[in-house]
Image (cartoon, rainbow, N blue to C red; front, side):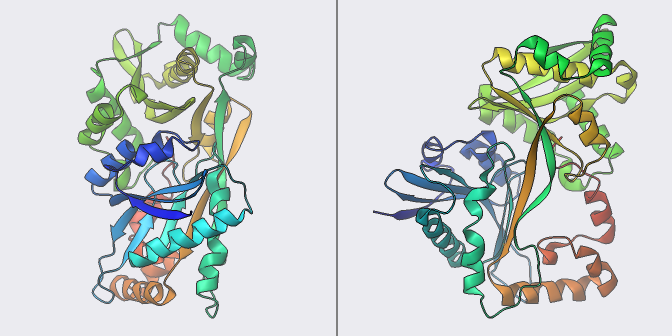
Length: 381
């Protein structure tokens, strides 16, 4: 018999996740951290029928509005989340039922719009395809303003196959990258796991400097408290790697691992040692560490805002493997959405609001300066 549940992180969240392919970004612990940092209320909708399961973790946010009080929207945690499913395939009647039931849950919560970032390795955007006709059916008389309502490919990400023999993996780097890594090690750069997180202050300095160089939006400047909670809540699923040169921190990276997936979550090189290529040496060492710990794939992400830019080109040097990075966006209540957008235009002024033509939801479009900064940031470090 089919049932639908709405869980918070204190419920059997991870128990349901264990029925599906997933990684760290979907866990109760990671969502709890996002909730505690003020990003929204962490919830997960689960629809199941026998052994068929769809679980959709999300953040529920209140929408500040004088014109439309009491409404909310749904978004994803930082990273790669979205729905997870087991024992079904795209096109199954079960997925249509799951989409309808989960949409009903959101409607009962007065959700205006839904935004999702999908997982490139798990390819879980396919589990949300049934949601679009459900939403369109509920608004059949309305001509949607968003031509790309539903799922859209934003760009590509890069991963490294950790099951390859060492010689094959190194050969995929290319000659120049191999030489740069070899030269970094010959000059004394060496990466290890910082078991005690003694270099966390160095990590914060380097990470925030990296965000400054990329003109990142304020949302990307995670405070120390965020990293303390990652360490405490995720335990051995989260670790800090540090590349040192002459006892000084030259590059850093916080990594997650879960179900064979190693994620290079956040990191970068110190500006003082960039000529030594320490982050290249670190990523190669992280690949080796990840393989030794039994992982099968290392995901290093994509470019800024999923663009095919210099950051993507840097990551692409490590592997030929590419994955589509997709987002999803749906409007569940068109009347409320339009009213909120009109309120935003009135408050911001038409010139500024017009900057948000590609921003979703449009009623949350930041200032023009904020848009320009957000466009330069990376979806995944």
